[in-house]
Image 1 (cartoon, helix red, strand yellow):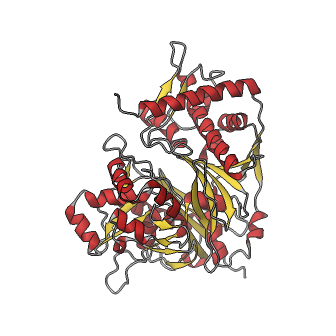
Image 2 (image 1 turned 135 degrees about the vertical axis):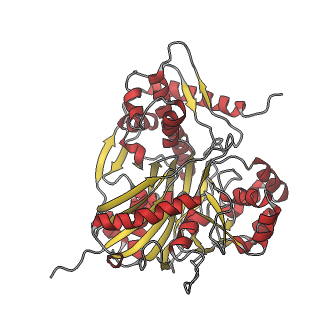
Image 3 (image 1 turned 120 degrees about the horizontal axis):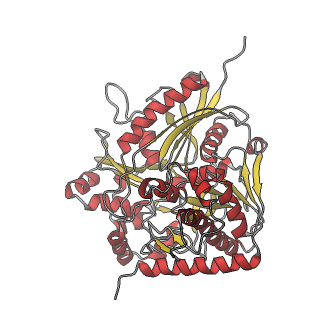
Length: 509
């Protein structure tokens, strides 16, 4: 009699959707269940998600993925949870009801909060302790904003009545029991080192909450989750299906690095999703960037030293394509952006800098605003579509330049993944502006794969990391073909457009 198939699961909670995927021993996807959630934009620069809606989606897709694979919860050896990292949610410990909507990583409302932080402790101290620049992007200012808006909320937080976390904490707490009741213990309130390293509150050296920063930002430790290793025993699911061990929590971009099997120092990847994120594994060394990159935790096995990374973060990549669809009506589906861009031979002289949330790496300019420059009566929709794709390519170029400078050696190729890698024109444009080959693996959705790999390794489903390396297969490669003089000219125009975006965000006079 054949023994029942045993699988490993990943729950990938992203910026626009949440998915549950099951993988077999060869790292092949067996099933996927996915649903989008609503984006809320109540004011300019504000981006919010309904955390309760996201949890309701999780409750639907986990059973669906199991049903589609034809397996029971007992056949799932481990679950890995991965998530949009800096998005922040505050909820009631007793009821499980969120205190307002979650504030998304793209949100820019916290400028005044950051100014207070700067007066109390200073950006240099924050960067030295956390590896992060002082920016809207990270979670600490979002939490402080939530506490500032209502004295009752702040008092409840001080009294330990509220819980804070990034989306991994929210989902894991609910998976493992939520508020508990009727003889059931409450869920575990935890995060992992990769997500904690994105809060601007965790000390990179101790891998614990930094008491000096908590005091300076007036954040009560009682609301914060316990920081755990990335890979190790977290808990067991109670809802929506019982009995699945949770074996890994990991931020989405670190999960992608793991899914690309970039386990050794010097190995890198770039993910093109809602934003774009380049990570370089630096091993057990904490490398401080001098060219505008972030120092972050890549992963940590329970009982082993942490592995670190340098990261270049770009706020708008696939999100820019979604903006073209939802806000401008230029396209009906994301796939149409490539077709529209191919209707013209070039950008017609127009450049788009999508500084909708300021500029992230390597500029870290919270005040920069988006601009579309170089418009003439010649420019048509196709030129704007091409400028949209080129914006992602040139932003990637800026981050790779910074990474090369920090590493002291130029990258020889770029491993890519994420939904945007299906756009062949974009991939060719990236190869052209970087002047190096771009390589995509067979499994482009490496975020979920990395979470599954992490959970499976922790559970002994796979014996070691070398086994996972054997699963990697190349699906596509793009080689540069742009003449040097054209690349230099377009790079100069892009940098001019960047300068305009940064100037436009400054107050007149």
